[in-house]
Image 1 (tube, helix red, strand yellow):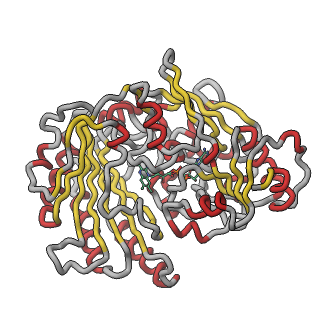
Image 2 (cartoon, rainbow, N blue to C red):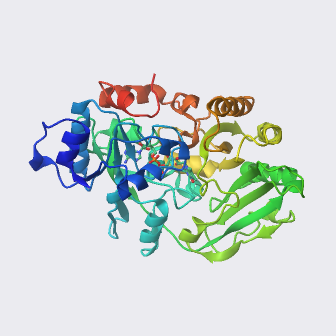
Image 3 (cartoon, rainbow, N blue to C red):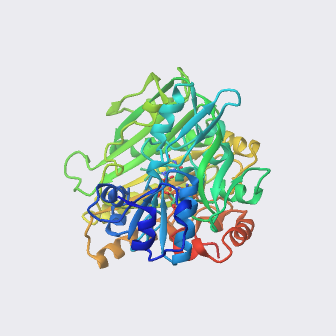
Length: 479
Ligand SMILES: Cc1cc2nc3c(=O)[nH]c(=O)nc-3n(C[C@H](O)[C@H](O)[C@H](O)COP(=O)(O)OP(=O)(O)OC[C@H]3O[C@@H](n4cnc5c(N)ncnc54)[C@H](O)[C@@H]3O)c2cc1C
């Protein structure tokens, strides 16, 4: 490990920052350093581990972040900001020959029982945050899986609790932000309200670096939850049950995540290369008939039961999980109407045909249905709304995951990606629905689908006037 002073001189050849203001951030420069190796390899999309940062900075405070940002700006270096490393998009939280700011040393968290507000730094993952707040019988709005990081909340943040409380960003009350000139400020409805608006679902890497989140916490008890696994023979029945849940469920405590998963292996034996997994989650002991459309269909496995802690819900296993794989993973997203639309059938049919036709060219593909309930869009609006300004539910997002083998020849890799993209684009998203930024590919330009896009462009011009973020790190484009 090196001090930030050495980082400035060795990695950036910059010596103009006073050492007294450097804070005590640690810096890893050697590719053989254990922390450096860990930071470089800990990406959900393994492709990003191919890049070699010139150094990795581990800030311990917003002052350290401010110093690093000023130094990076002065040097003209490229850089990236990394929380949980789950963005599949290259250079969003990874960098080649530039400075990686890794938040893993900023993990402070606290709870104020008087106000029920929770405050946390960006370096924990959701499992760690859920576990911490569980002792107070509270939780924060985050993701459905424990391993994902806090960058999720800046892109909206969809959890099983969203039909009750809206997206994760809807619960922000105040953010501490390091601006791109190094100034440390706060953003809330009363302080820098435009910045606050942009950070509520407008994504990381756009307006500033968030160093502390203060959020409204929510009560948490025990859940009825589990995983239902079906063989492919029941694909159509599960599809219709998914349609009916999205279209007709009005209980905000009930939520599902439906995933069709296909391995590259040939379907010679009982179609075991394909499986359907439905996560059912009910905030309470008795879901009543909320999931009966799914439980009527014969299951290969059913782990659902009451009395599960929220941390267990966030750790529910995925069979062929790309969370565990070290492959090249990309996401694409679609947004579709449910009423009077056959889009749910079309996306499934195209996905299934593509998965069959391209055996051998991927490790794993999956198609995932995310309901957007009316109660969720109402809850978001009641809290002031976010950058997506989501139209009234019900409608749904559909996520497509493509996992290709590391080392696939570049030409082949590009051809598979192009054909996967064409498959997704064959079912265009419904006009007027925002694309889910957290799971969009960079070429999908999700921000342009938001009704607030013009306002976001203005905020971008105000907070990134000389295009520092736009030019020196990866992220969403605003033009
Ligand atoms: C297995 C898996 C499960 C997922 N499940 C969900 C889910 O349930 N709900 C959901 O909404 N999304 C989900 N996602 C999508 C996820 O929200 C995005 O991938 C998100 O970008 C991950 O955040 P991160 O902190 O892990 O990633 P990172 O790649 O570290 O960060 C994501 C982006 O935010 C920026 N960023 C991070 N922290 C800050 C900060 N403090 N200030 C400024 N910019 C910052 C980064 O630079 C990067 O551009 C999932 C993704 C995966 C791979």
